[in-house]
Length: 346
Image (cartoon, rainbow, N blue to C red; front, side, top):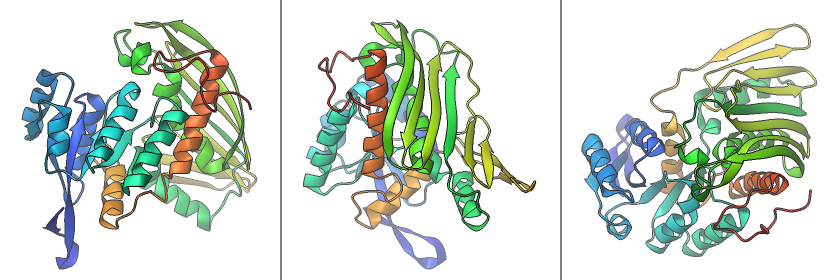
């Protein structure tokens, strides 16, 4: 890390980044990184050199011809912006090279892979965080603060979901071999919201169906009911249907509604039982990826190996919800054995 002038005359250690993948998520990460203090994008690698070269030219960085070249370069951390099928291999390679990892959601294909990656990070004393952006948005943080001072009581019910009707069949969401399907592509957000407000998972019930993808059947719609320590959630994810993408949090003293797209939260309305209504709004700067990245950079400067907000256990429980939901609808990826560790049972 190099030092960069910070606020009020202080200095911040500059976090130097490399990106794995040159797709949409990586583009949004790079755009957001420009709004993170003392952070610099250095290099990019993609399985397709032409994609990496174009990406590098646009962002003024170096395109690496091999993954090994990127990991050997002068970087502190990598952002994994590829499809879920490759997350495990790339995270393990990054740790072997001594690099910290911010990994796009879902963290892995399944909980078994996640445990392997978390163990590797722990052994090497490196930071791993799943890139789950909502809790770092200004609106989400302001909502938390507001409810501490003017509460709706313990949230006992969460409703959230999204279904995308206009995704082309050529998209990776329809590719079984890339870890496609609505559950891994969309439902991580919903799983996060339920766990964040209702606490640890106790049970998952799922109804869903499979449909033809580009390389085999993937889940095209799933409806989940989850039970947690503090209440229940109704969640859904889908492809081919037009879902709204809003969210509801219900407590004994009131409720919160977050409009679509709730995972990029910019507004919320709180309706209290006594008739009061409070509207909150916060603008979103850049792509929104900057908020989680700024948090990650702060953790690195403090030599932390785990986020206190996006904890490893939270990632485990999110993955557990997705594993159990996939088992219920019968979706197994080619990279997996027929029975997933932790996928059966309630």
